Picture 1 (cartoon, rainbow, N blue to C red):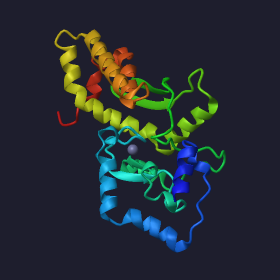
Picture 2 (cartoon, protein in one colour):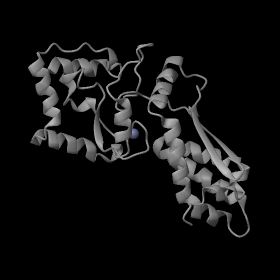
Picture 3 (cartoon, rainbow, N blue to C red):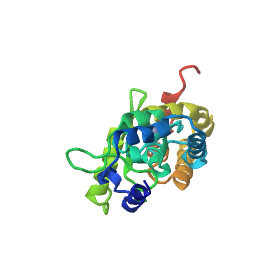
Picture 4 (tube, protein in one colour):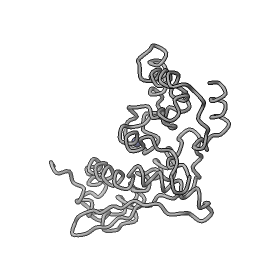
Length: 246
Ligand SMILES: [Zn+2]
């Protein structure tokens, strides 16, 4: 087992091609069982991993609460990493479910998902949001663009992660939900004097704060930037995000 753990640490982040450790079926079962059953050591490990503030928000999507532990290498195929802490990623139920037991893309042999502990995501902006106002409705669409200077393989990896976790749809929906909560703040900034410039300022400040803390590709940072650049939205178009109940 120790050799398998060392192999994992030696290979990160490219753990997708790791050879499976030779084990008998009862041994494999025992390893999977160790994760599933609520033994004291496992309860402690689970608690320790899920209690960290830095991963309270799911590191796969950046949207939801981490409520599960995902096996980056699935325990069905790799029972030896069933309780290996570095293979256990606090994640939300949506990401965990969408990821399932997949590791490598069958076609390209490229890893389908980022390993939150080990994949270094370049500090360049690759997430963009297109904002449109149409018939007083706000339309958002998220996509990835390959920045100049980013290797194609890195971009393909990011795109696979983005597509397979359905992040475009999830960011759009949660973005609209988030903006509904910001509606009173937009009204306050705009004020009786209909000051679109103050709305722009508020959005840019919010974007900067998000970027400082979560980096340039945080879904809300890019949303705020895009909205700040949309004159219609800032000049009263934010009425489109007024919560239904208000
Ligand atoms: Zn998630």
